[in-house]
Image (cartoon, rainbow over all chains, first blue to last red; front, side, top):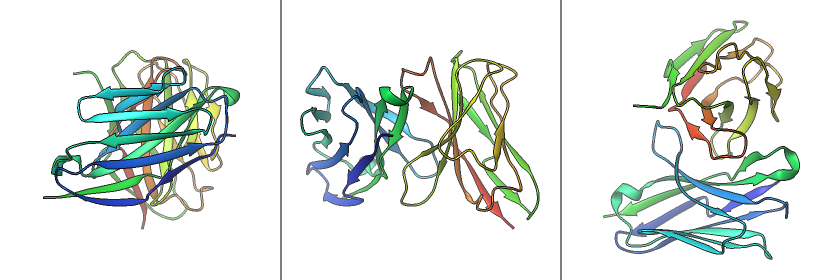
Length: 113
Length: 112
């Protein structure tokens, strides 16, 4: 099946700086890559996603890039704010296994005021 | 407001007991899922259901059972056969198997 690796596991940035989280996947047939934000005691919330026919997608301060050749995708958060502090998960939808989603192990982001 | 409701938020189980976690959605979604979340690990799929009266095992189904008698409801039973049940359990739903999933706020299960 698909294997998704996520780095770093923890990330601390100063307020206003940028944060980048990277994920790699193993199955070249995977074609959809969502990112989730999980706050303490809550379920993950979808924040942005990208499909395999697109290289980049942006939504205000959040952007995602995809490199299909290298099989990696990244989440970029600019002008970070304290409310961005949370755990972020990447995922890949694997068409070879009935469209099952496989998740990374999460990145705990702390934005220091 | 439409969403996914999981209850209870915290649950304690004694050794040898079965416990059932509730998941209800009012999003009119066909597909529903149960995941287990452990510290430092990604979400792992326990069971999923694409339509009423049908469900399939995920990657870690041993020691768990589910039912899907209504479109809105997908309860998960953690049986005594699950030897390491302490975890955070997340329920999710989606329009179908292809579309992104929406998650509830989870149930934290602990062993007494």
